Length: 259
Image (cartoon, rainbow, N blue to C red; front, side, top):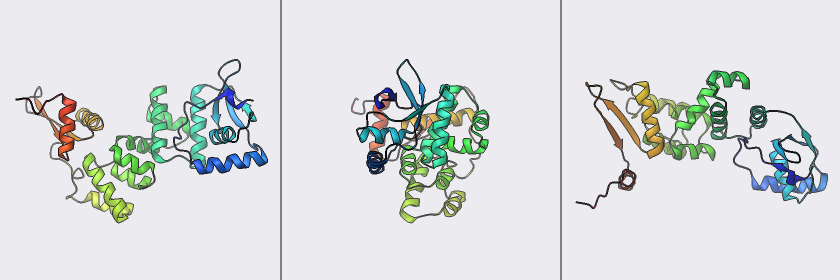
């Protein structure tokens, strides 16, 4: 079918493609043609949506090929997303953050529990849960995982640290000192590590989720504490620099120069 008749897979979990690898594949396709067909599903009278084979499709376009061999499958959107995810997992092409984002997309779109998703994918529930926890990490830490500076093992340990500033500090320490996962675990279990020691009065599960939500949106550590009177309490926002403090004021609409 014409390469122009195929749209990308909207559920493609992979976000990073090696440009050098695509160029090499394009050269191979020019010389040898496409040996393995792409897989698509029909979405209109003459339009198709990719299920599997994004690198081949991209390389074919790069090589200037007008057509590409394809197999048409009649499947629903969940199966399409599942096949794309499984293909990339089996080829180990996904970085941990891409895999976590793919799990989150499937959970949100289909309204599945973690256990239901794990069953459909043939995986352990703990595996799905561990990947989803990575999405709560601070953005600088997620970036280090995406570019391979932090391993999945490091990421799982860091996901257990509630303080996002401490997550960033530890991740920089891992990179600068080449810490192993075992050494990181020892460091996190040390009482001197903020966020690792258990608080005397832990926040409720609801407040913990709210703290994570605030932290993700503000990029700063946030604590919510209720007083003895449950109708009262306080919200503490921790900033790491004066620049962060200025950003916080701007987000809150506070004019620091106004008297």
